[in-house]
Length: 269
Ligand SMILES: Cc1cc2nc3c(=O)[nH]c(=O)nc-3n(C[C@H](O)[C@H](O)[C@H](O)COP(=O)(O)OP(=O)(O)OC[C@H]3O[C@@H](n4cnc5c(N)ncnc54)[C@H](O)[C@@H]3O)c2cc1C
Image (cartoon, rainbow, N blue to C red):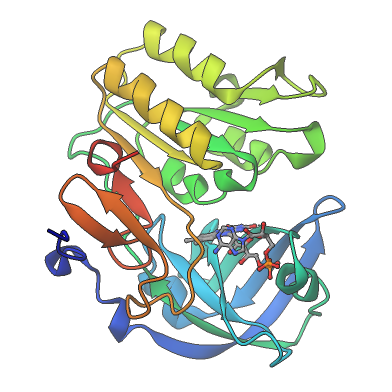
């Protein structure tokens, strides 16, 4: 029998999200292929929760589908959203050419964000590459956290100064595949050591799915609740097209509506 699709009671009303015209305040290169986009989008900044995402329409109508991006910082007072993105294909290449003052059509906030257990005191956040971006607002919202940032090279590390500003430099652990910064190796190696050394009460991770799967397994072995943010390819972003389905232990769920953040224990890895 086919499992029922999705869990309507757990969606956060993506269908009610509105698109709006947001002015580009800044679109700066952090490295050769990493960019930080700042948008003036007060209505979204006022209501966005850590871990939710926005769906951007690219200026060139040849790109029919919007592109989903997590928000690395939402500032309700200033009315701004920050997005850190990596150029991986035609859409993000076009986005990197958007200039200050340009208007972008933004749909959001979308999806369900991070849901740390009530009373979380000390969390472990594990980000791989640009997947670290949605962990930044989570770090801001927690009383204390250790952060593991992994990347292929030093140039691909995202947000280490921001994380250090939020949790303290001593609590940020860096790994690079090529050893160009921090400890040579994978984020999961340090995650394993930290889980053995500290009684965390929450683990959150975002980045390449094999990394997330291993972090989830390490957290399960340490008996610590874990949430993962699954960045599946998606088309509509509002739960209609079913292109981003994730198989869970209780049925199929839409990454754009019931996710992108899922309890690791409910994902059928
Ligand atoms: C909820 C969510 C949040 C995301 N947040 C960020 C973020 O904060 N920063 C960031 O750089 N990227 C993020 N992504 C991935 C980003 O959406 C894709 O990299 C982007 O859509 C690629 O567009 P493109 O036209 O440049 O690439 P394409 O030419 O369409 O594809 C190029 C490559 O990107 C991959 N890709 C395309 N779409 C997606 C997608 N939706 N998810 C994963 N990989 C994809 C393809 O498999 C291919 O390898 C997020 C994705 C999701 C679903």
